[in-house]
Every structure is written in structure tokens, then in C-alpha cells.
Image (cartoon, rainbow over all chains, first blue to last red; front, side, top):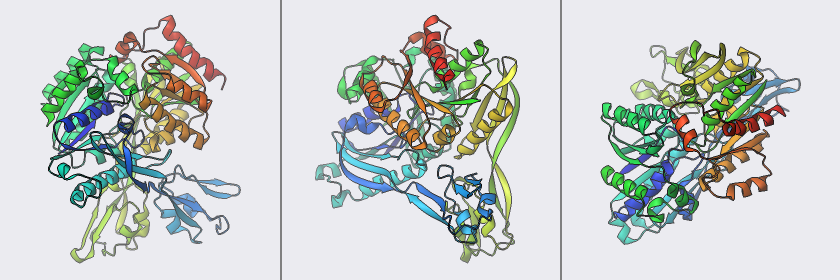
Length: 302
Length: 286
């Protein structure tokens, strides 16, 4: 089974909820793989401090550079760049690596063969065991792009890992092989490319929102996107008591869309204390109201 | 014009809260300021200015190939030139398909085609709207169409429209979260970046990514610590190590959270005013 946790709006509690779901799935006897798809700001590993046994460079993309010695300053590259990445100065033409999209058109059009493409592969994908299972996450090198592709690459590694369980490539025990496997994905904020990569091929989508107009508005946009994947959608309202009225509005909207609100979690400083202690709330304080609510919610999803 | 980006690696730290409240207080002080919401995937700033009136809008579009199958020889050169694998050609079956989601609109396919079988066409990817608030146009919103994946052209266009509209003294950019393309394309268009951070392990980890990125880009920045009492002291230890300037610290308050939740600017109390006056004082030194 594959469960993705998304929100549209950032900071509603995706990682906090995912961290608890991972612990609860383990408790229920699943073979758990946690995947952090927020490659710009991966946080799940901070809670679980895994023992890294897998490292892989990820090619985030390519960008073009001009060999000034071969450049005849004809300007063909400058005139045809769709990304405004090439600038003209008194000394010649320069490509801004930040704006360059790596389409290679300039290199193909250059009559002097003066343009070549450089690969950037300083972004990393890591994997490792932790107390509740196996975690995979990406660390996008600052300023790199293509986080959607990176999410797909991480998920591909997860698939390979599951295909290879019998060959023991990932230090699995025989006992693990008899368990039903579950993938829990911690999604990035927004509704763009990396979110689309996160939701592709998922069985169940959990949308974590908060009782603010921004939370509601962003939830609507992410649910509109999620709808196109035709799978089950669930909503969790986090910190619902910061505004009961907006929380009610969210519930009402979900009702008209036939989307179940599976739990409402109160604002509780224990949640923050758990994170500061690098634990999920269900491990840190299993008797807390938030832990109980999250446990109830998880039972409704599986 | 001083362009100030309000940004953070982590989502939900308070970018929109800071942007909208800073903008409003500056307006109240008769400063010639504009606000542009460039978090185009999930723009929210307008929720806080219900009286704002839509003035004009511009649709942002991107190149797409219009493939003329009657002229196509299925030679496959367009697919070979496409660096995003967005065109599939099966010569045996005389089949050519564009995978729209993968296309970045670079036009390489059109240049590749020697048979005139690819004509230029456009697809809409977003919209930039200008709003009248406080009797003049000084609010802008970029919004990406759902299920599109190219946020950056919408961001660039929004900033361009805001910068060209008037010579504002300050332009505030409510930025997208993260440290990749959308954040960078916003930051490189700003003179100064305010990073909004939370004192939690998640907050510190994500702030570190943002600071590393800004240092690479050589863009100056300052820090606003939001919900500064919901966490521990590790953030300040890290900021001291980085020699980063803290411009303002805002504690968690249920009143502020409530105002925000219903789309209101925080009540104009002395304490709230002070949090934002600290920011304005810093901006005046730039």
C-alpha cells in the first residue's frame, strides 16, 4: 500500500503526521518504508536519525556554458533562448547557470561548437534503517532544480528495494519478508512538479490542513490536483482549535465533496516538544491527545 | 526601488503573515510600497485584503509545439533534440505524441524539424492580476494553473509587471517555499531577502539550506524569528555561528494566529507594531 501525505500550504504538520504514521504502521506489523519527497526541505530523517547504508548522487540537471575562445559573438544563442538565461555584455555573451533550463538548444544552434553542457550531481539520495523500518530521502543541493525528477528517482529506488527483498540487498531479515509492505510518503508543499511526482501511483492521499483561510484555500487547490489521480482522499485538520469556525468551514467543504475528515488535532505544545526531542509524538508521549487522535486517524486510512 | 523577498525553506513559518502585515504597516506610514504574491502555486496574500479590487490581468503562456502530422516524416529528430523526453516518435507506426507535462517550451523541436511539421503554439500556464488597494495599484498576484508544473515563468512575469508598474519605494515579494528554482528566481530579483525561521529542528535544518543558497548567490539577507518561543535555543546558536543578523523576533500568540486564520491583518497593538517597525528600520538602512 502507498500512502502520501500532502497539504498545499506548508507548515500544517505533514512531517509530524507522517512521522507518527510511520510509527503506527510499524506497531501494526507492516514492513514500513518512509519516503521524504520534500527534497528542498527534508525533515523526516531528523526525527528518526537513520543508520545510512545507501547513498547515491542525483543528476539534478545540466546547464550550458560558452567557451569564450571559440565564440564568434554572433548572438544566435542569445536570440533563441526561451529562458532569458543568456546576457549580452561588451565582452560577449554569458549564460546564467541559475536561469539556464538545460534544454541544449543553444549548444545545438551554435555554429562554432562553442557551447557545452555541464552536469550538476551534488544532490544526494540517502537510505537507511531506523527503529520503525527503512527511510529514503533526498537532499537537494542548495540552488539545484528538478525536485520532481528527484522524487521519481527516490521512489524508483524504493521499488527496486522492494523487488530485491529476497536477495537481501538491503539487510532485510526473513521475518520482514512475510510482512505486508507499506510506503508512507511525506510530500512537499505546493501543487507543482514534485507534488505531482509524489501523488503518481499512490493508493491513498492524506491532506493535512489547518484552520486558516490560507490552509483552506491551499487544501482546495491540492485536492483539485489529487482528484485527477482518482484514489481515496482523507483530510486531517491540525491545530483545529486555533479557529473552530474555520475548522467547521473546512469540514463543511469536505462534506460537500464527500471527502472524510478523519480527525481534528488540537494545538498542543507537546507536538513541538516531541520534535525538539527528535521523536514523533506517538513515541514521545503515546498517551497524549494528539497521539490518540493520530492513531484513530491511521486506523481509518488502512 | 528596493525589492525585498520574504522567504523560507520550510513552509508555514509565516512568510505571508510577515509580507501582508509589513505591507499594511508601511501603507499606514504613507510609504510608497507594493506587495506581489509570487507563491504562485498557493498564493494567499489577497485573502488579507478583501477590499482590494481587481484592475487588470495578464495571462502567462508558454510555447508548445503544434505538430502537423500530414507534414511529419517521423524521422525522430525533434524527439532527439528534446532534452526533456517530451516527444515520442514511433516511425514504424507513423505515430508522434507530445507529452505536455514534460514539455518546457524551449522550442528545440521546432528548430529540429526540417519539414515544417512543427508550428509554434501556446499553452496557458498562469495569470498575473493587478489589484487596486488604498486607492492605487499596489497589489499583485501570480497564480499558476492547477496541474501545470512551470511556476517560474509565472513568478518572473509577476515580478516584472510589479516592477514596471510604478517606481515604488519598496516592493515586497511573498515568496514560494523551498530552496530550488522558484525561490531562486525570486531571490535573484530582490535586493534583500528576509528569511522567516522557526526555532525547531525542522526550522533550523531548512534555514540552513536557504542560507547556503543565498550565500552561493551572494544575496544579502536577515532573519525574522517567528513563533520564537515555540522551540529551543539551537536556532540562535546556529545564527551566531553564521553571523546572521536577526531583525525581529515574534513570539507565538493565539490572537495573532486567530487574526491570521480569518484573513485579518494582526490587530494594531503596540507590541505587534514594534515587531514590524524593527523590520522597517532595517529596510531603511539598505
